[in-house]
Image (cartoon, rainbow, N blue to C red):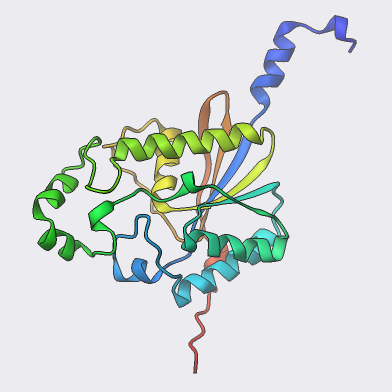
Length: 227
């Protein structure tokens, strides 16, 4: 069709069809995950199981087609992204905005320790006020706005591409809420699975969830113990 035969609605339709596919991966299991400690923005090494999950994830992504690989700058996410990059050859683009929510004084503590050492702050935290900021950390609203601005920026930067982002559980939660129009107090019905693939489509300022918790590659994960 010649340019002179085009109609404005044709261009509008093409623009609406352009989208970015974003596959978000939660990092492999860490030592603090297994101990149920609050990680936040502190570093905790991948556990033996987490390393095995990362290897299985890398093998899975070798069979996938994608254009760019992003990672949080926290060690657990970057180490998981490295397991992908080593096999696929993608450059890892590091973005600190992909960090987990900052939990300030709670980081490194388990639930009992948080309650014992900081009872007043823990009570406010448990009340789930979206605007309560844990001392030294972020409020749920601050975190949500930060993470969603980052996702939107990466998506817009690579319109029409398929992007893999290795990040953290609560960033996944943010995308889930955006895709389902849930407010910050509404319950989420699905689990945040380490090293799983969670696929979203972004276009026209909206997020759509395509797949959640794809962990087929983890079914035969074997943890090798050192002699």
